[in-house]
Amino acid sequence: MKKLLIIIFPLLLTPFISSAQDYYVLHAIVIGNDTFPIVYLKKIHIISKRVFKNAKEELRYKKLKRDVLKVYPYSQLAVVTLKKINNNLALLKTRKQKKKYMKKMEKELKSNFKDPLKNLTVTQGKILVKLIERETGTDCYHLIKELKSSFSAFYWQAVGSFLGYDLKIEYDPQLDKDIESIMSVIEE
Image 1 (cartoon, rainbow, N blue to C red):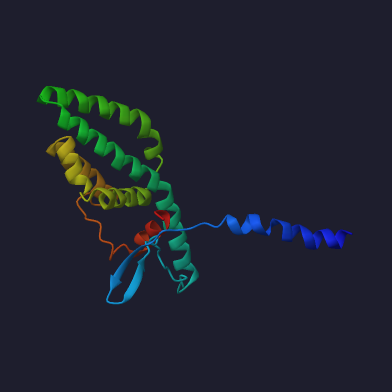
Image 2 (image 1 turned 90 degrees about the vertical axis):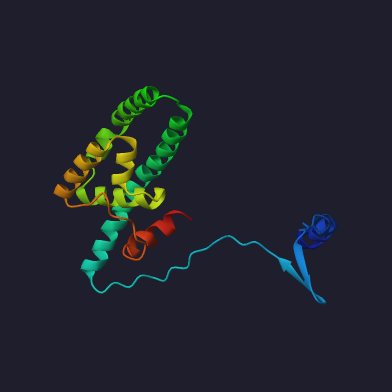
């Protein structure tokens, strides 16, 4: 009896299954007598398995990946905050209003990010500077100069050079291939 039910039950469901077909309407282009469907696919990145020369190079890459993953959220927050600040500054009319707004934002940013950013290593700071430049298209020196003053930009450039990095350096995907490959995986 069980065997009979196992055979009959799927046969009873067949009309319901076949009537519940999904249909997709595709756009197409006709060239001559041929019709070609137009299908939009998601962008994919094909990355070959990384082969390292030695264990030291593999360890260096893993540290870089860890550091990029740590500072990536800060770079995204920096971009969002920068857009917000620029939009709000465009709405303000007088220089006094802009200066007051910038003081308020600086105080707010310091209270939110001073401690977490203080705990970054020098290498993580370098990566953060590169990622901010990558995301905004403007190096950190010019961002500081635009938002604060030339003197502040000069001061932070001097502090940065003391720690071993340059705020004026532009992000180059060819020179920073490892960072770029890590970012392509993160941004998927």
